[in-house]
Image (cartoon, rainbow, N blue to C red; front, side, top):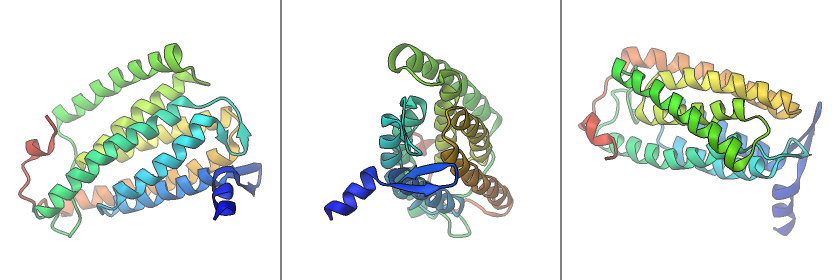
Length: 232
């Protein structure tokens, strides 16, 4: 058991172009599983994602990424904390809607496009979130690349909240986050991780196509009022 824990904490897996930390790989596998379950709108997407958040936080906060011992990527680490917080809300909300009837196809929720007001709120939250993240990363924590990491953090916040609400747009936000994230990781020299994120982005595109289709055919059959699902 001790050897297994040692391997989990400090082990690496050789890959072309370098090596991947075991925690990094396992954390991303949990994240990928969460994305696939989220695509299918299963409540289990949230608790499984939480496990990945914990593992990846330890990777980014220590800088032990892709076999490197380098400067922490606080934007990447910070978004894992936010994922954990919003995942609790998403877990609660999807469970509530599912118990109240869920979607017509058996999913926890029925995907839909955000309203004009909700989109304006997302844009406003994105601007404020980016500004706050940038200040924190430059003035408080320090960061390898605050300009891009601030968007990674703010965009991740928007995407995770959008998933909790069941908005189709959240997949598009994830695409933008992945584009910046992969670019940042390449610039930082974390090539294996960049490749893994690029692979993950493929599933994001697939998820968008699936939710786009479901938004046209799946009906919300729950008795949960939309406003009741928003914490005061």
